[in-house]
Image 1 (cartoon, rainbow, N blue to C red):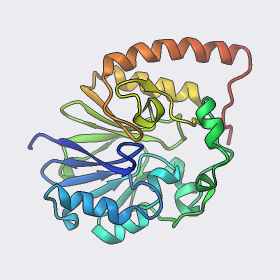
Image 2 (image 1 turned 180 degrees about the vertical axis):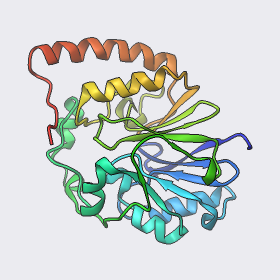
Image 3 (image 1 turned 90 degrees about the vertical axis):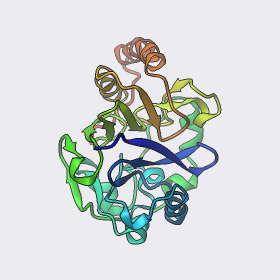
Image 4 (image 1 turned 60 degrees about the horizontal axis):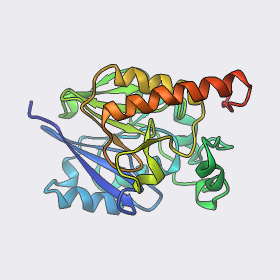
Length: 248
């Protein structure tokens, strides 16, 4: 099977919100962006010389509306089945993210009240229901979907055989990509310690690069150093009883 190329498709701003096009024997799309961005992703696919009707699968990394907001629309535009994890079926079926959002810092606290985060978007039913690791060979890409819970219960990432990790909101680039190359938390996590454990498990697989939902490609070694500092910070907060975690 040919080497998989990972191509970002910016949905909002230059890299504030990204979908990704994985180019292997057949193309796969990871994430469906904000509500109303299906046509933009469709046209972004075509701009890279790919017939959108050739897309074999749309993988949704988790149940926040900036990642599944246009899943139903993109399914109609491409005809491709949509894959999502069973633990985030509630948001997918209702069209709403679980609330309240749990901020990871000042950015999240600022954003939590933004009306666009509380919209009801068009719901969808996953055609491919993910429960564990899922091989993507039959969909034309040498790689697999890996559950990476913590950001939400049903968060997943895609790891290609060449080592590219399409990480959703497992990690982000600082200030939505404004500070290139600098790792940071996304604005929200349902369970920060579980998310960090998922991140460290993926780093142990020695990815060659992390392609994130918010921002630009991150270097794994820099993310490892960030994760060590974050582990110490979260451990202090947890010990002090100051670490919010979603329990349902």
